[in-house]
Image 1 (cartoon, rainbow, N blue to C red):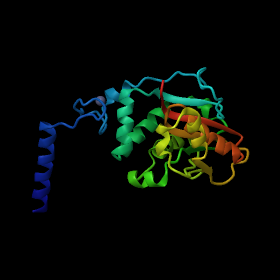
Image 2 (image 1 turned 90 degrees about the vertical axis):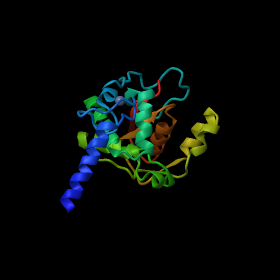
Image 3 (image 1 turned 135 degrees about the horizontal axis):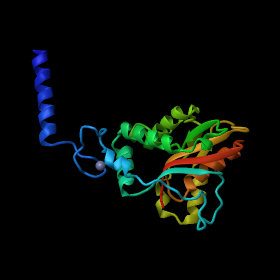
Amino acid sequence: MEAVKRALLTLRRVSLDFVFPPLCAACDEPLGKADAHIVCNRCYDSLIPCLLPVQRPEEEKAFAFTRHFAAFEFDDRLKRIIHFLKYDHKQSVGERLGQMLYERVPVAFFENVDSIVPVPVHHTRRRERGYNQAEVIAGVVAGGAGIPLMPDALRRVRSTRTQTKLGKTERIGNMEQAFAAQGRFDGQTLVVFDDIFTTGSTCDACARVLLGAGAKEVRVMTVARVV
Ligand SMILES: [Zn+2]
């Protein structure tokens, strides 16, 4: 009886997939057999490599970190992929992005690096979402590079939800007070990891806090950068 029920369920799933094939979350085209779940290979393959310098001339404040590696330009396709990862609990997308990032980062970037530190999310947001997406992606990179991940090095002391209402200078001040170091990192070289780099103020604030806790050097790595 159990076997019949299982066979019927399988048949239903197969026939539904045939009539309504699942669509790619980024381009709305049907997913093929070779595609991973959720996002099609064409979308992953068409992401644009980011070639911007660390500090752009229009950025008035000098960053506290020394290098920045971003794998891709933040375009509409990547926006949809990352949005999906953030709000629909799709860990497999995070793992794929982590793998793609790891394959692109120059080996020299990891020279002398002691640990990778994901930018923490505020605990209420983590509770809503169930996980920190930056930590998922950073975990794949750390595993590939054989570098320890330190998810608890920084703590978000308050939520920065109201950030959009503030002016640029206020936003920088607001960010620096948003994080606290948990422990000392004397003499260490650390990589701060985030999913998207917009103005750089979040990564810069994290770098300043880690340097204040003794770190010798902080580098930044992100999946994408707004160009
Ligand atoms: Zn697609």
